[in-house]
Amino acid sequence: MLRKIISIYINSFKGLSKEVWYLALVTFINRAGTMVIPFLSLYLTEKLHFSLSQVGWIMSSFGIGSFIGSWLGGKLTDKIGFYKVMVWSLLLTGFIFISLQYITSFLGFIVAIFFTMLIADSFRPAMYVSLKAYSRPENQTRSLTLIRLAINLGFSLGPFLGGIIIAAISYNGLFWVDGLTCISAIIVFMTILKEKKNPTQNKIKKIPISDSNKSVYKDLPYWIFLSIVFIMGFTFFQLFSTIPLYYREIHKLSEIYIGLLMSLNGILIFILEMPLIFYLEKTVINKIKVIFLSLILVSLSFFILNISNWFGFLIISMILISFAEMLGFPFTNSFAMDRAQKGQEGKYMALYTMAFSLALIFSSKIGMEVIENYSFNTNWYLMSFLALIAVFLCFWLIRTLKTQSKLDINLSSK
Image (cartoon, rainbow, N blue to C red; front, side, top):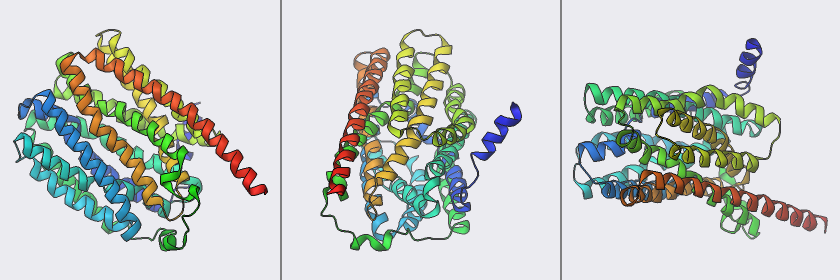
């Protein structure tokens, strides 16, 4: 039995190109150093003594920078190619992260975090488009999953090391490590991975956009999908803003224990996500139905936090949201890439990442305001309810896709 499980795990990694593995390595190096983000809300309240409302505004600025950066990254990717965007984004982000530790005023931090994310998140659309160039179409979902595996392996290591660095040195050490790992990642990237043109990049001007289905802005199913992604991001981003505060203020956990609990998310995804996606791909299951199930798990993960203050519920909640992430994120990535029209990959993936960035703008601010004016429990009920709204949007999306498919069949038969 054990041998069979190991065999399935190994087979789930087979068939991926070496370039995708190189991308995963670079992503791991970069993500392992991203220690600031999980502790940012704690840093702002404990080190800089900002109020929860001020932290909410800073996190909203974080999201606005991410939103515009995602749009900019998509535009630049279609214009100059994903490789150049990835190189300059990582390099500049490294130097900016190092400089963040020297900014201590409220307004200064709002401006600084905006420009940090503007540059940092221009990387994301370029990364998604790079997978179209470096992976075969039949392996795209697994290629995305491998990248996420690298992200989560880094994420499982990052918060744990971050907690140790805070305890042993200070919060300032996080900014140095974060910046230097970004710079190291891009050095590795340029050394081992050579630029490759996206096969559709040179065909952009030849593709007519007269048909409504060829324009992303007239693609109704995709906009319903983006609404689902927005709510998924809105609820999930509580993991990096209100949840660490909940661990500290309600459960009185230290940074090391908070880091360990947050690392559980990355460890579970590292061990289970690739075999799970491999199995689901073989069953040819409907992507939207998988996303539907993930949103149910998101809703439950927040709801159970209100059942009791027993520490075990923190672990159960983290397990639920981790499985939700394993099911939801790869298949939303895959759906967006499959839906993208040739020559418009940058636009489609930019809107996809912008949906998450828009969620980040409102998620932290609204969460902080709800907690400050009401309670943590009220915020968890709100997140649970929002996830259920996204569940109903999944039903609408499935119905819309079926209707559009029938129309396409009728038009092609005429």
